[in-house]
Picture 1 (cartoon, rainbow, N blue to C red):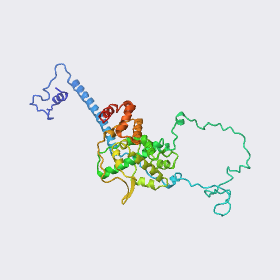
Picture 2: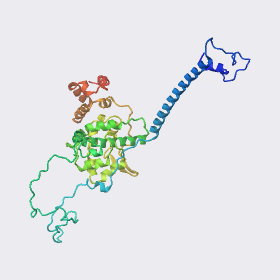
Picture 3: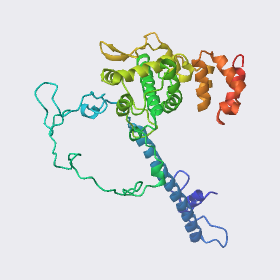
Picture 4: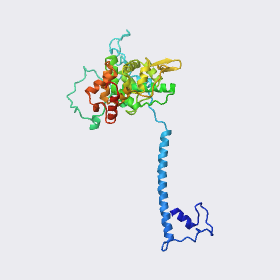
Length: 392
């Protein structure tokens, strides 16, 4: 007999919760325990046991409610997106190529007579000559001063000494490859979103972080194939502009861009050269589309150039209306998605040199171990894939 049934019998309730009549066999007062049992002690023990179970269940329900509230709030609150935006005009004054002028205090080029010595010939603004400025020919030479080179007012820790000192590190980029790879990933993701919105094919999966890491590995080789030169340096005006437009708070975010963003870049003084770099990368990407990863690998073959064009309704991407992207990746696309960093660079170099997919894979298989091609996560799947590919 269960504890609940026992309590019901003692109190005088049947299984339906109704009070037992005095004529019922199990009526209150007629039930007795075995000889020597203490009814009161037994009831108290049973009640305490049931209360412990109830308290345990209440705690579990409270934990579940907390988890439910956290999951619900995370689902309802949209993730804060990093948008690519053109900065204000005053913020771009140092990114425009400066005009080369001759700075002189002699006769002005306009023929209006000599320029006073206290007027800056370039900025035409007055400066106070008495505040720490003097004629070198009349100033007394200073004696040797031990400046204690290498001493800093504040101690420099080892972590600070080895901190990334790239010109773009404050904007979320370690080097020029991370910047151009992220910029190219933002463009391709934006094109895919426009394709999905137009066609309604919501089944495509786009992993922005994977695309960004992949393009960062190979963007230098793609640009070199088209221009036979290196990407613009970190100190260039192109990088200065794009690092402001695609500024991010961390190094794993792909800023979201729109067709209007790219058109604004194109119309900027330094933006035209930026778009020239991007278009060159797209041109080379068409030579090795499988390395762009599915489904971008299919889109990059269909998209026309220039990538961004003017339309009656505003800027848009040059994606033909009859473009159809399959949701199933090919074996070559899967192969590229499983390759290690250096292996992918090797494959891309073979393909950019004119080798076919099979030829490039054959060269890699004969010169590299399978552990060099794939990491431990994809090692067995990669071996199986190689056995199923033709002529490998």
